[in-house]
Length: 289
Image 1 (tube, rainbow, N blue to C red):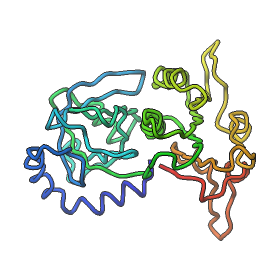
Image 2 (tube, rainbow, N blue to C red):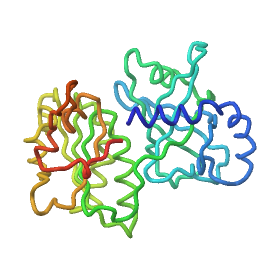
Image 3 (cartoon, rainbow, N blue to C red):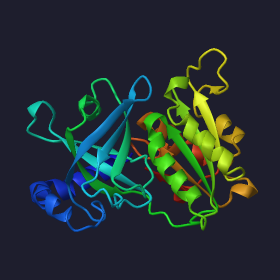
Image 4 (cartoon, helix red, strand yellow):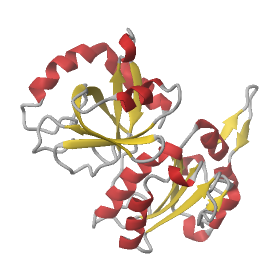
């Protein structure tokens, strides 16, 4: 998730935070989706489930059970909290993982990072507790925007890819093909494995997922290592090949991974090209969440 997006949203919104909170209860009575426009809203936690060793699935109740969230494909939610009585808020964007058309709930999958202020706070929430949210638009998607998208994710950066992939595939008017490469530390970190297997079965020829595991367990069926040029070529993602001329790449992962993929700027000028440039992808064909 782009830090710049979170900061921009915070700068634009935190000054009117109290005003929107005062309006939130009133807007909930309008019968309109709560996140159909910008505003801060506190939602009550309905349930919290540990789905692997460090990730929880949390479902929050929308104020109108007959309405969906109002979030568009693809969107994130900026979370706002004041853990341990802090004077300044802690801000962190997360991408909802439930169907955006689902009524009454918004769902997050949140990985806990040791020392992470927001993830620690969210993991401590119990049903009935509240958390404040504001919507953040990300990539503005329209059906058949590109003929083929290559999604490259690292760790918890998989959530915007899952939201977008499912939204594309459920739309009968969108014939976009999707290749997903997901790099994780261990097999247990593949917390959306069942969901992706189901998408592969339902959409053969349109959706394909490749897992790359840094430390796989004995007998793991997944490739060992990290997301490298060779891994991406093996997934059929050479940007210079004729079949990939219309392919666009979406990236979301830890900063070191994104730097390796997109390249880095040198302090005294110049730049170090990334793996995607080596594969033939120009900057105009790459988007970072």
